[in-house]
Length: 252
Image (cartoon, rainbow, N blue to C red; front, side, top):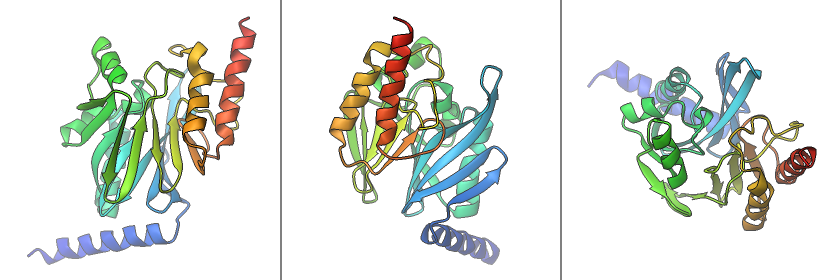
């Protein structure tokens, strides 16, 4: 037995346990990557990117961590940041990413998919996301679903559901019934947002109605995580509907 490797593994497990138990608010990995401890073993991963049209901005994803394994929701926009994030979990916390849930076909959801597939991580997406990936010659998630899919991850129920178009034709939500956490992705805007951001692929006529269906399906939401910016409560859903109505009224 390699004593050094065994000791390092024990230290990693201990560090992971301490971070989860202490409700650590934020773990900074580097200038472009951080983890925000939301609740229990649920973390938001935040990655920072720069684009000419928007400057430097954050993109969100999530980790559900149980028994040394993780389900990842969305990736950073590129392979390198995804690789650093996954290696941090594995090397520093002894946590292995087992599955990726893709929120929609844009790169801020699946920019790291190709890397994850190369290390054997399963990937799941809506059928409309698969169709878009085929059209644009993007890496294709391994498994798909039609309306919804629910599965148990070491005792944590995870519900992926398609409510309709909004930010894109294929955007889904991920809901954790036990902790009442909704990952809304880019379908939902943060409270600080004054507009809808990029709407080049939006289904504007359906967006507000889609969010209304989410509100009706999950009336007990405690936390809502948007695709970009600060997480909050169910008021993010109403705020998003208001922004959609504002955008539509500008075009009338």
